[in-house]
Image (cartoon, rainbow, N blue to C red; front, top):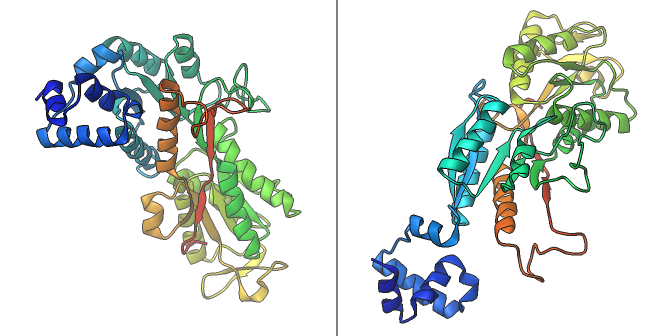
Length: 378
């Protein structure tokens, strides 16, 4: 079937069919419906090669498959990728996947893809301090959006550098407010009566990790509690989380609850809590009851006892399986936001349309709010 067959069946011109396929807003709704009925009845499929020659666009969005990690937190970006694929399809695009082990190899892959497949745009994930990928794409005028804020150079108090400032990020981005997530988790524990709430995070210098730590510290400070000495920094793994949690639990004044930067760290913390509880070692400044609950003098709950509670981050399938409370990211919404920002780059909205530039200029970034999912661990 050809576009001519569709036009003949719908009783319209070839140009009208082309407009329905490529610029439907130019065609009246009644005519659009008639053309689409003809397309469905005839089983017509537009030639991607012909469309690319006509529009100069491949309708491809390239993004990286993240390296496999510990099987826990690596699933987060897998879920984002599913959402990205679905959102791109609804907008008439397809996802082109590639693998890369580091920044240099990823930039080399950009070069290869531009020469071989000509993607219309890129979606970058896992942004970090001093990320060189945005600059490479920007210098070549290649459209892109990042899932993650432009953190800038490590040590920059504002988290951004150069032209990537809060007012001018330099490129469109979508992110989830990690600080808001850990702050919500900390406030939940404060409301439950805990005052010695620890934090397990990553070594300083990680934009995402520092952001999540700041939410925990800010919530404690607002409650009149000094967060100094209540946190541990470690690599992101179950064994690392267990070791760091043991250090906090064995302190002279042990913590009674933990907020973690990832579900991997939280799962390690759960292992530590269970093993130390079973062996009766959680007795530094309180006592271990027969029910395996730690009682700490001078805090809400008193002799009734409070469990050592643990909250993770990312709400992975493992968290659901083991009853771990966790902060959930709206990954489908983040993926849709990335595609939405890209399509506005390709087809800017007309004045007065939703998303059109206003007095403050075009919308260049989206910061989404996470949610706290409570389970047995808290």
